[in-house]
Structure formats: structure tokens, C-alpha cells
Amino acid sequence: MTNPRFAALAFAAAIAFIAATMLIPNDYYFSAAYTVLQFVILATAWNVLGGYAGYVNFGSAAFFAVGAYSSVFLYKAVHPPLIVSIAVGTVVAGLLGMAVGYLTLRLRGVFFAIATLALAVVLYTFVVNWDYVGGARGAYILQPKDLPFGLKRYIHVLYMAMVLMTAAALVIARTIETSAIGRGLAAIRDDELAAECAGVPTLRLKILAATVSGSLMGMAGTTFPYYLSYVEPSAAFNLSYAVNTIAMPLIGGMTMWAGPLVGAVLLGTVQQVVQVTVSSEWNLLIVGVLLVVFVTLAPNGIVGWVARLRRKR
Amino acid sequence: MSEIPTALILNAIIAGLLLGGFYAAVSVGVSISFGMLDVVNIAHPAFIILGSYIAYIVNDRFGFDPIAACVLLSPLFFVLGLAIYRVYYLCFEKRGQESLRGLAFFFGILFITEVALVLVFGVDYRAVRTGYSDTTWRLGPVDFPLRLVVPFAVSVTMVASIEMFLTRTFFGRAVLAVAQDALALRLMGVDTLRVKERAFALSIATAAVAGSFLIVIQPVQPAIGREYIGLVFAVCVLGGMGSIRGTLAAAFILGLAESFTATFAGPSWAPAVSFGLLLATLALRPSGLFGR
Image (cartoon, rainbow over the protein chains, first blue to last red):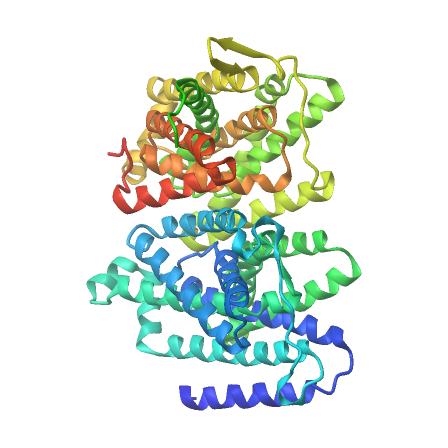
């Protein structure tokens, strides 16, 4: 399938999905689906750099929070429409990804991983000390009263935005995967030195991937303050985002755009169920254990596993 | 700002050096595992917190001194380290997948340890009481709180003995040789796996001791391990990969930098220092101060 056709199909499917699910009367469905879709975007974004190029980003929470806090900042400053918040947060997080990539991607891959891990701590410190966006106390955001398209509740608007953003993220990931960029990134993953020798512009591709990956993570965070109508630093920078974002592509499979989608839908749904029936701490423990089990025993994830079964037949 | 009093600066320097001694104990394990063995153990801070909780239990139940208890219990951590390295080797290093999946593995261990501690102990801060917790020696205007001095002294002793062990004993030199060129060593018929395994186990054993220092210095909660991730790698990289002396020097530099930031900009800014230093080192001199 060509990429434009895939894009058309993805957005058509997204709109059909929205139309079909709008009839569900239960509000819980929307907030649960919102959370799962948010993880689909985060996992897909992580996979652009982590899965395709093999560079581990532990700072997903930082990029997510940058998106969320850019929305808070804009809300405090000018009360912009939601779409403007989304666009600005995406760009800011992308610039952050580019900056971190530029500083550390020239070195061994592990330094990038460590830098992203530390980045979360530093941005957290920065936000806690920044009173304009609420500091450690957090900030309140009022959901707008007037709703577009005759929708009934604000969560419907957010849900709709989330479905469309998910489609966009998947289209971007697939476009990168099937283009020359994707092949370049795969070459970097397999043997960076050989790729460099073969004329692949490794640094430029890595920085590009870091930028795209960061901006998509930020995009997922932009609607977060509106979703909860209250943000505090420890919620936006929660380490569970980083863990989930890594666990989902690893469980789903990292070499294809479908992997993070499968992993995120599966793990996200399991978590919603566990969170409601057991407790949120156990829920996190399950994610951690699944991550370790999959990474040691099924290194190619579910998609890789299915592909191998198909080949055998 | 008006003139800064000398006493304030002196106190900041002493506090920074004492803190730096503690940081050396926290980072020396990573200097061995990451710097020498090339095992990127980002779960190291989680083992430190585990050590803190063990010190807490022993102190709470039996009234033992936390530091002495953890020094005596560090062989347990040594065994734990052996087991972890075995799994890591079999699943990742042997297959050449350590860069991505090995990292994710350690990240998972970090997370599991943290959540397990939350499930058992809750998110409350835990503290220990020792005979010297509230004593402070005064030398003129300068304070020497014993809850910092004791960890400092034990830490510097530990780091110095590790340096002696690595440079003076046969096994220690074998570890340095693995760090230099593992392939060459294998070609000479050395079982590098066994050397790496034990060196890694040693690095985890230091985490137990560092954990006891941590809980003597401040109350501990499962999630604070994360704050030390940036710190340990900053110290390790700044000191130069695999240099124990460099680690000690870098730990003092970082301790001083944090102490001055806390004194003049406020303690809430201190966590940003290690990251700033890490980024600056990576950008300007990735081989560190004492790097080869």
C-alpha cells in the first residue's frame, strides 16, 4: 500500500471510528479510550527513534510533560483554541528532541539514553520552580464551555482530537518506516559504523528521528491538562509514562509501525482493567514485569512472533 | 547581593566535600559496571534504595547500626549481582543485544524494585536513628554534622580500598584488563565471563553500603532513587570512564557544585546541577577529566 493511500485510509477509519463510538452513552469509555490512545501515540513516537534506529529514550515523560506544560503556559497567557495548543506543544517538544539529539547523538547510544533519563529530572525541577505554570502546587485549567460539531461533553472533543492525532502519528511512523529515511535508520540500528561507511548520513537521520519522536510525544501531552483540568508536575512527569512507552513497543514488536499499536492497545487495555479491579500500584508492577519478561524471552514482540508463525506455514 | 560572609562559604565548601564523599560511594559501583565492564546498569540507584530499606529494617527491628549492618550484609548483594549478571549475559550480551534490550531490561528492574518497595513499605519517608544522628562537631564557624562525617569517612575508605584492590591484586588487575581489551584477554585463555561476573557483583555490593549512607543522611522513599540516576552517570562520565580516582574527584566536584547551588540559589535547584554537569561534560569533554 502506498503511503498516501494508507494516510487516507487511516483518517477515514479514524472518522468512522469516532462516528461509531459517539453513540456510546457511558462516559467512562471515553476517558479509558483517551488514555489508551495517548499511549498508542507515545509508543509510536518512541518507536520512531527506539525501534527504527535502536536509540533508547527514557525521557518520554519529559517530552510528554513539555507538551502538557506548553498548553498550561498558553492557557495562562492567551486562552488559545485547542488546536493552537496542540500545534505549539508539538513544535516545542520537537525542538527539545532536536536539541537533546544534537548534544548527545554524536556519542555512543548509551549517552543519549542516560541524558534523556536525566532530562526528565531536570525539567521536573525546572517546572517545580516555575511559579507562572503553577510550580509544585500545579495549575487548574477550565474546560471551554462552547463545544464544536454539536458534541455534548468536552471529553468527546478531547477523544476526537486523540483519535485523529493517533491516526496522524501512525501515518507519520509508517511513512518514515517505508521511506529511505526508515531504511537509513534500520541500517543505523543494525550496524552504525557500516551505515556511516556506506554513505548513510547517520547523524542527520538520528536527529531527524529524535525531533519527530519528541514532537509526537509532546503532541500526546498537549491535551493532558484539558483532560484532567488540573496538572501538577509529578502527574505530568510520572515515570510510568516512560516505562509504558518502552514496554509497549517491546511487547508489540519494534520493527513495524503496527508493533507499538498492538502493544499499546493490549497493555493499555489490561492496565485499565487492572486499575479498576485491583490497584494502580499492582498495575505498574505488571507493566514492569511484562517488560522484563518480554525483553528477555520474546525479543521480537508479538508482531515478530506472529510474522514467524506465518513464515513457518 | 551584599558581601557574602566567609563562614557561609566555608560551610558550603565543607558540606560540599562531605556530600561528595557520599556521592563517591553512590557512583563507584557504576564506575565499575558501566565504566569498566560496559554494562549500563541504570538500575544501580534502585539497588541503593534497596540497601537503604534493608538498613532501615535491620535498624528498626534489631537496633543495629545501619552502616555496620549493610557492610556485613553486602555479600548478599554480591550474590544478587552474580545472579543479575548471569541473566544479563545469557539474554543480552551473548546475543549482542545489550545496547537496546539490555538497557530496557535494567530499566524494567529499576521500575520493578521501586514499585515492589512501594507495595511493601508505602510511599512514606523512612528514617533511621543512630547515636550520632544529632551530634555536630564545630570548628570555629564551620559545622561538621556527624551524620555526614561518618558516611564520608566510611565511603572514602571503601573507595580507596576498591582502588587498592583493583590496582594491587591479581584479580583486580584482571578486571582492569577486561576493561581495556576483553577480546585480547579471551585470546590468552582467560575466562572473561567469570571476571566480569564478579566485578559486576562487587559493584552491586557497593550499592548496599551506599544505601545505608543514604538513609543515615536523609529520610528515604522508594522513588528518590531516580534522582541519583543522573548523578551517578554524571560522576562516572566526568571522572573518566572506569577511573576510580576520577570518580572520587568528580564526586567532590559535584558535591561542591550542588552545595553552592543549594546555598546561593535554593535547595530545590540542586537536582538540576548534576544534569547540567553531565550535559556539559558530554558536549565538551566526553572522555571526562581523567579519561584516557
